[in-house]
Each structure stands twice: as C-alpha cells, then as structure tokens.
Length: 292
Image (cartoon, rainbow, N blue to C red):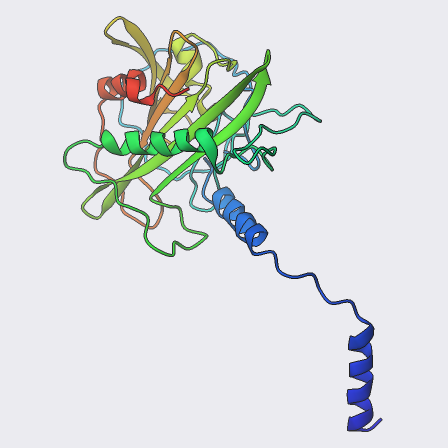
C-alpha cells in the first residue's frame, strides 16, 4: 500500500466512525468539583452521610490534655468527616433508603446526590463557615483559599451541606465547615459540624461526643452555665482531631466543634491549641452554630 492508498483508507474509516458526543462543560465541571471534594475530606470515608453507627462502651471520665498532632487518617465512620489532605468531605454513617428520591433542589428537580450545591441548605453551609471565621481568637487569622488550589491539596476553608435521611417524614441534614487557623507560618484547624433536628444521635454528652466520626478518647462533661457539654480532651488511636466538644440543643439540633494543632502535613503545626477546654465547650452551645 502506498501513501495515497493509506490516506484513502484512513479517510474511509473516519467516515464510518461515529463522532464522539460534544463535551458537556457543566457536567465535566460538576464531576471535577465532586472529585476535589472527595479528596479533601477524611472529613470521613468515601461517599458518606448519616444514621450514626452505635459506639459501644461507657462514657469514661478523662483528664484534660492538649492531644496529639498526628495526621488525619481515614478511620471509623461518624456523623460526617473531614479533611485529610488526600480525601474529601463525606458523611460515612449516612443512610439513604433505596428508591427514595433525593431532596428537591432550587431548580425544582431532585438533587443528583447527597450534597446541596445551591438553595437554602447550601446557604446554611456557607453561613456556618462565616460563623467559624467570626469566632477566630485574637492572635490567629483564618486565611482565604489561594487561587487555583491544586485538586490534591486540602483547602484552607471549605463548607458542605448534606442530606442524611428522612426520619418520620422529616428531612435530616448536616452542615460541615472548617477553616485553617494560622499563627504566623504555623497552622491548625477549627471545624464545626451541625446535625438538624430529627437526627438519631444520643443525648448523653460523652456518648454524643464519641459519635463524632466514630472517634474515641478521654471525655469530660463540662458545664456551660446550666448546660452540659461532652468534650473529648484527648483522642484515642484515631487522632484526626486533638479535642472536640458535642452538645445537643433542647430542640434536637446537635453541634460538634473540633480543633487540631495541624492543618496538613505540608505546614508546621501550632504550638498550642487555639481554645481551652471550657472555651471549646462554650463554642458548642453558641447560638451562632444553632442551624436549622
């Protein structure tokens, strides 16, 4: 076969081959965002959301401590989970009834998955992030995300609203947001997770605290006025966070506030945690985090 015959054969082959479908830019961008979010969370295991797994054991009273600064490793499931520098924002202990449609979005159509990407629920996740930034203590900053953040790098700020399940006809949602707290070149993290009324999380303060991402640790019951807050002051083998507080409001809304002395493996961690145990407990009952 000479060169001209080869070209004729190639043209003939191309003429009978179906052209690929046109690129759907919106779908491609949406898929890319989902991949990026999944990379940015240990925020708990792949594809998660919420009926919380029961954690066996009796609430133990521990002694306060600053906690370790080990890395975020994917561990047991919990209400939600967040940031490992290589994993994303899921809610591992969520459960979705097969055949049950996802909630309707602002466009009048069902969501494509658990995560709200527009509408009032999405706005609640954004509001939660704003409230986190508003409580950054003196001496620390909450830096913005850099432009063109690499897909494999954990953001400095992020937020998510996620449908968990429908319980007795009521939609149960969870909102999770976090911000890096910087002190010079050193950086830690503050995360808040809120579960709306109707959730099946326990009422006892330390049992509630130990439901957070399925993590265990030494727990104290801390009084904030007339309320009681469960605070894990020292984590067990799972040290994705150094300390976290848990509070169930009388209307059933649950708030978790967690802090860690490191934000990622590429930056030096803080020399001390930003909040004391009483301050962390007070944040858990703060009305700013009481979302519906």
